[in-house]
Amino acid sequence: MDVLALFLSRLVPLLLLFSACLLLGRFAFDHLRGRSELVARSIFAGCILLGPALAIPYVARLGYRLAAERAYSNRRWEDADRLYQRYRELHGRETEVIRFHWGVSLMNLRQWPAAEEVLLGTARPDPAPGEIPRPLRTSVGICLYYEGRSDRAEKVLEAAADPGQIYLSAYFLGRLAERRGDFGQAIEWYEAGLGRSPHFYPAVYQTVRLRLLRHESVEARKVLTRFLAGPDSAGQEPLARSLVEAAAGRGPIPAEREFLLVQH
Image (cartoon, rainbow, N blue to C red; front, side, top):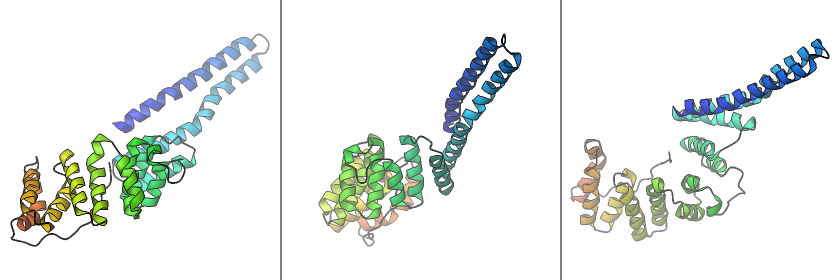
């Protein structure tokens, strides 16, 4: 549906271009017909051909963009990357939506530096967090995290304020705090994210694990109870089985685990 809407939105300018060329040709034909029928017909034919000639680059770019968006929608990440690259080579205009979709495609391919470069677009290298478009900050921060650029990742993620993605930025801020050995701060970030998305399993896993390491089994069980009460409780139970066993003292505390996450 999004691809169809994109096609229809780009069809209107093409129709306007063809209409303008037709009107120009008719005007020139009527103006010159009295002087020379041959010249008038030649000018009219030239104006008719002008529309398609001007439209060829536009149509080519549109074709690549539609194909890229379709590949992105179908999660064909390599195809999407290749088609967006071709769109860029044809000097297509890169909107924030295009940069986001292309960046996400590269992130799913684990090409973090390339994804960061696409997301930043024409911005200077390492711009201030406030200079990065707000909808793209979380994705840029995730790229920086997986690149191992912890200090910069933290600054960018702290500046990310997309309400729909706060649980993601909070999760990675928790991971960064844990890397520093600040378990208390890490738990605060994880639980801040769970306040927005209580069934986000990676944050549940990390929170319960750290709570158990701090001998806070009561708090760990509260997190698990809320997670298991989610809309897909049957599907969530297998994920939480080892956590439940550990919280009940019947199993070992789960090991640290790095989840590979991408913003969509």
